[in-house]
Image (cartoon, rainbow, N blue to C red; front, side):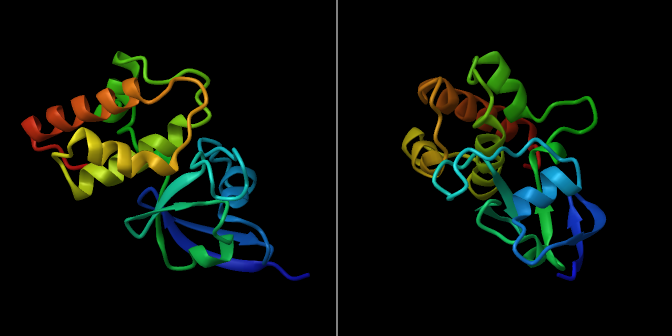
Length: 162
C-alpha cells in the first residue's frame, strides 16, 4: 500500500507527513508527529478526548482521516500555550481544579477555546451545551464550567485573542 503525502499547517507551523489512507488524524498526530496531547478515549467520536480544531471548526480527530488534513489548518492542545505562558483557559483549569486524570482535558480545552473565539461572553448554559460532546468521567462538570466562565471573563477584560 502506498503512502499519501500530506502538506498542512499544525499550530501555525507548516507540516508534511506520509500516512496510510485509512489512518486517522489522531493516529497521525500521536504516532507520526509525536503530538500526544490529544487522547483516544473511544475511537468512535463519542467522548471528545481527541478534539482538535480544523479550519476553525472542532472535530474529533479519531473520525477524520489524516489524508483529509491536506491544505487545512489544524490546532491541537500543543499549540494552546505561548511557550511557557499558559493560555487563560489552561490557567483557570488549574486554579479551579477542573481536571483529574487528564484524558478529557485536552479536548475540552480545545473545544472551550473554540467557544470563546465564537462567543467571548457565553452563559453557563451555552458553555454546558458547547462542551456536551466532551465527556469527563472524573470531575463532573461544575469546575470545568466555572473555569471556562472565569477564563472568558479574564479574556474579555484583557481583549485576549482566543
